[in-house]
Length: 220
Length: 242
Image (cartoon, each protein chain N blue to C red):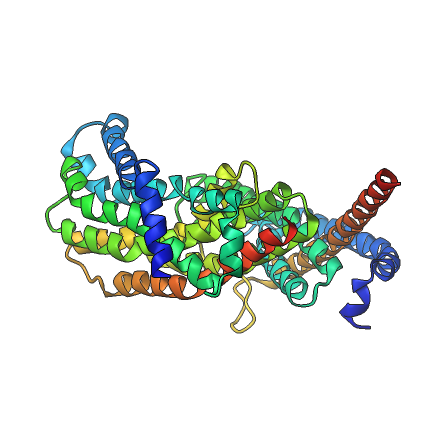
């Protein structure tokens, strides 16, 4: 399984901009927001945490259809299904590789983008913490969406329609955690809920993803 | 009389053709009776004026919107566990009806909210969770449309329905936490005293019965259409092979 993870990471890096692309997209979103809402610091500071969370969501979404598409086309996925490791494990590793190439760089870069958006000082810690806790769930759920649409020719738009509603709870608790943390309010509930959703997602959703992949490979 | 008998489409077609006219007729009677009673024969409420009458469409539609998703969850499970073909088709048939019910609840709510709250839309927990439910219905239907092989489509939408149910429920509570609402509490509930006087209660009950029967009739009709469509496809395929 470790070998699979390393393989996916290597592929992501060598096939062009695995780490860079998501970050660049994130930067563009952050750059465009002030054009849309005006450059006043007060407005930007208020919406900064929400914008950063939405940017993370969209950047994650962009690379989802590549998780299984290439492996499906060249037959690697068939090998993975018949391999001695359980498919659920392989799917989890795929999600982990996706998180390391898109989620983790965003978590690390978020404070820098926070400066661009005048994020208030107490919010930095909470922003990084909430993204760190929340983005793994985004990758795992995205893997589920990618598994559902792997056999389709043009699954991209459908994929976002399927996956984005599943992101709602994570987004709500993540953004709420930053908002409350920045305002110095009680953060226990959103913190625990966010961590709980991510933990449960990591534990359970790979079973659904693996089931979807088996169904998709059955007909081919 | 078990549901497994109806895994046989012939049996299902036979029984449903007997039930369908009754369900349709009763639905029409209940809806006509309930709506006419509700719209023309009940007084205006003290603090709502005549806007109270939207309740006869809004409440049943909202109830159906949630319960239809529940019905899809059950039929999907039956399909996934026991390969009950008619059950999968019933789930497919129910989805567009559920989506329209959600839309009706949202639109009638907006029409009521404009004079009462002074706004068409408010990011209230109930309104927001209905919007999210609407998105779940859209995704579910889009996945059905996108996949050619009917068994694959049934399997994948079934899995989506299971995962979606958990997340729809989760979103419901997340949204409650996220914003306090304008929407009043439930008008009807099983375990507490009702917040509605008998004048409105009886026509509302009739409307709810009408909506349920209407849904049953529509689902039967649409499932029958799906079965016939599948037979047609099988026939076409056989012709091409010959």
